[in-house]
Length: 304
Image (cartoon, rainbow, N blue to C red; front, top):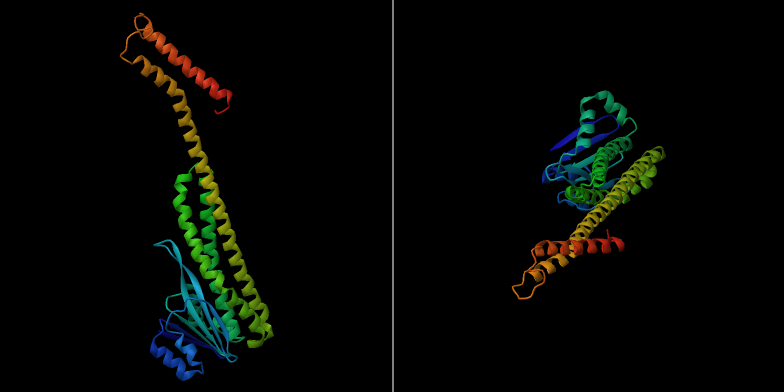
């Protein structure tokens, strides 16, 4: 599906789910290298930035959070930029791109405002929208980390194990999408002054800094979650050790009692106290004395 927005200085062609006909259209109307045109149809898994002098070729991946499986997945975005034309190609709907493209399509005043400085301004503005779309996702992750932290320190260690695993998986996917794109935004920053004009260098430098902020926040979230996971594991280990300790103390205390009970349960002749009318209570007293003795010994050793 091919859509076009055109102003006096910029033509923006947006292609959703490209076909061979779309590739033929680009071949007939532009002078892109055949290698670039062949790269459009098959998905490209890795970011790219290439400067061909008269045009730029970029491959980015937009982090899309899929609520059904609670995972962040990449959505490819190919960008071709000439001196007066911007071409965006993607296989899935990318909401920030669609929203910005729709604004330019519907509102002439915004189209003139956002395109009056040429294609560099349009590229900067829509890439800025895409980067800014990551911040609500980072806030969502931050809120989940806060909730996990509260539960960890509220003795709900078992309940948060699954939540930590799901969020960690999401963070890893997010980082795998974002981190490799550093070269793309750095390349844009370095090329912007020469390709679009020196006026645009601060804009693309700001884009690069925004990207670095997202990258650093992701790293911070990942480190925080790793530390929470380690803390949670330590709490669980401590609780398990306490339970084992209590069970061991019970076993130590009850072992002499069981031994005495077994001895007096033997069906043999000449067992002491068996003929005594108070023999039962004497044996019970002996068992209680053994238990008290063992408890006193354990306390003296400061095991409890």
